[in-house]
Image (cartoon, rainbow, N blue to C red; front, side, top):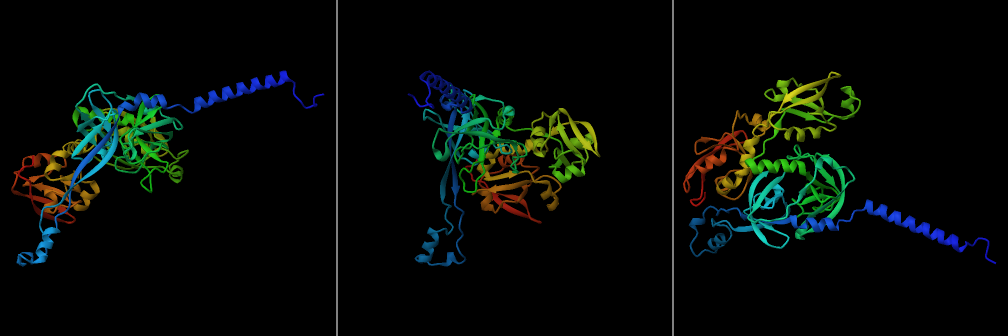
Length: 479
């Protein structure tokens, strides 16, 4: 006799069939949840490129000590100072860096980060077939960290674009790039958050995509794909206390990057919309004090009297709750929307003022000095090769502190070259060059081009509270 707890054979067969169905459906569910990226990588790998740059750096010139000329010719000290900086030519060395990018047109246009090619004297793009091509910079926009390159080749495989506005938190994404120079490395993860404001210079215009995709140095400029094989972002930076990946990666939304790239290709610079207001976020206490049901919106803290918001009647203390029909949940959401608005467009702002809801139409104007800033960035190679400095607009606070009424170009970086040899420092404001007023950073390249070569010219700078004339000489063979 069978034990009373035994199972008949036909019942066991039924249980086996049931378990098979359970496992089958479980496997199907897992297949839907965990995507297979193999086909995606195969189909899109050819659109990804590696970017290597070379920058020539020169060690600062050392000065011989007082009395050097009086030393006897056979003095060992004279030989020592000749060898180690006694007035000799500065030593030159090359710095190399690596990054990533991706093809956006079959005729050789490539999208990457501005910081990948910043200051580069030579740019080489390596394709999937390992062929190397010298690249030219078509345009750079440091505010969004976007750059467009061009290589002389045809019939390339271009990446397809997705819609970054349709991304959702939890969505699977994959990056392909060259971390630490290890080309065509694929890493995957999910979208962790959207619309991140990283509180940096360019963050005002970039609502970053946050992911947990593993990125490391060398990934910068590479594409972030969705599961349909469409580019939804440009991998830009990571949050790290060590320099390596710590679980937080950030990408520029492709909708932002495409807008910037199209403007760079057409005009060489980027034009952004401008409201003319200062804003801040709304926390719990502020929400209560202004009668809001919860923390949201952008609180107007200041209004530029000459800006479009002032002309439309926007006041300090207003809380902007929507812009052109788009809700403003976080204050950081406003600047990217304004910046992407075509100049001359009239948009409706939904505003809370003194507990009342108002709809105020505002005509968007061009961001002050935006064209000049981008022209300066585009022409940077021209005047960098001559003065070898990077300049930008003088911030309003600094202008007020220095009592500068108008004009000037703020020196952001000084590399070894004529300006450095003349004594120009970071933080100086260039006011005149060869007797010509510098109206802004966009005017500097034009003045530089007109300067005589091989002879000193005067350079007037504002340094702190005082002004100082310096003599700068451009090399006779510079352009």
